[in-house]
Length: 349
Image 1 (tube, one colour):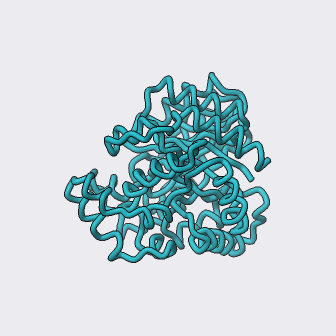
Image 2 (tube, helix red, strand yellow):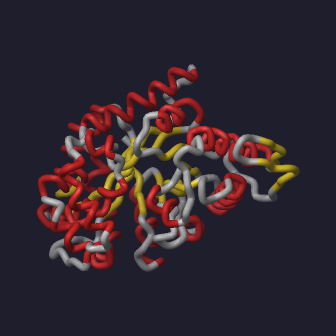
């Protein structure tokens, strides 16, 4: 099984770069970063990390094609690939639905799957050829070219999708892989695997070289209870972004999360967290000791058919800034990366 470090880049830049360097030294497959206005810029952080790392792959997860023109995504990716000596990849998707709403971007009813398909064609063309002439339903270019050229022969383009099923099937049909998010139950994991496989089969492709992963919110510590408290505090923040169907695949009904969503909508973080009981939060996070992680990855994650775990750590900085909370015994971001690498990743490989 592959394991990668998934960032929400909010910590001081030096701390982020130290954590990425640690992930590189410990054999993590990749470092991915959210590409959203809420955090520090993913591409700049990853570009800075390129010179401090040797093996770890680098890329956004997810870059939003409703916010970034695909020609610019290809230019950014090719530049990052040169800086890293051929270690860049792109996970692209519709984007954070809440963020699109804040920007007044209407995506519903605009054929998002068609746009994803066309964006893939545009990025693939620019990366492979360095220029594009194209007139599609969503994008049009006349003689657009760039001097940004990738080092690797085939820079991977993967689709990021949380709800499905059409975007997950599209990933299996045209992309180099699928990265989903917030899938923890056996039902939710098997659903992703099934939809991706349907797209692969429809296109008559072989799945052997394709990447199938899940972005997991987590925390790891020698003190398992400290890790669980940290994970529970952040789990509530993810509930408003999870489609109802995804919550249902975790056995969570709309009535259970309505108080949480209403509180967040009203800007009352304290009330939202209070409305998220431990019994609910525990279904939406992986947290505990290294042994807890190994047990979940081997007994729930791997049997579903998932082969790549993208791990995001709830650290003291995030708890303070998001929830105004402190958890004794919770390691720093870098220390959690190191603990996972030394005690979990080493066992998985």
